[in-house]
Amino acid sequence: MSKDRTRPQGRRDPRRPGAPTSRAATTSPTTATTPPPAPTPLRRHHHRPTPHEQFAERLLAVLSGRRPVHWMLGHTIGEAYEQLVQLAPRTPLRTRGTLPVVRTCGSFHPRPGVVEAFASIAAGEQVRAMAFRLEQGRDLRWRCAAVELGGDRGDPVAASCAPA
Image (cartoon, rainbow, N blue to C red; front, side, top):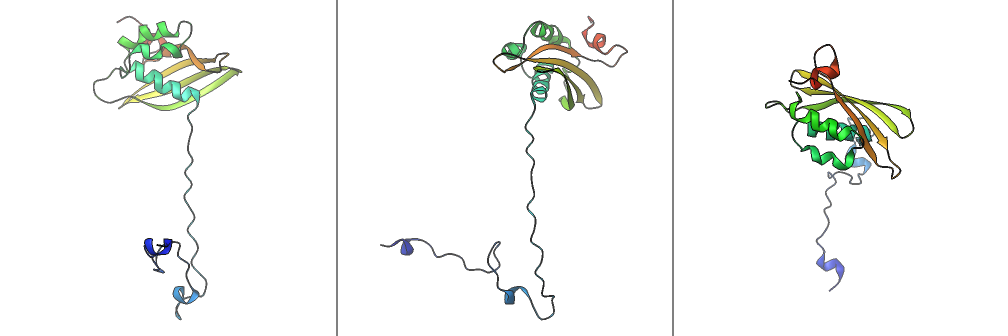
């Protein structure tokens, strides 16, 4: 048996997308002789998150109670892990209603291998500030070196870090 006999016959409908069309099929005596413009494909820009954007999401997951603090063990250096241990149980991001999300995230690069980042966290009508520092190790992995959480009173850090 040959290949042609086992394969189903192709569709020959001139109306299918991408089908070659003859000029007689696309024009009529009452229409213009110029063909319609070809549709332009939509371009989707895939945004690859930066290290500080990834860490903002990771820190929010811990500070909102969605992930345990030890989830950040390999992603912290210095006092950052202890800061998370202190902040996580009493953070205002632990809400029972609206799930907090990262609204904006920005960064400042004081020198190569260091990123000082900030994020605004929204949970319904409430907006909080988060600041953190990332340092790149010799293995080229980014690790969190410091975390601060802002509140809605005068001193943004003291508002959420003060004992309750």
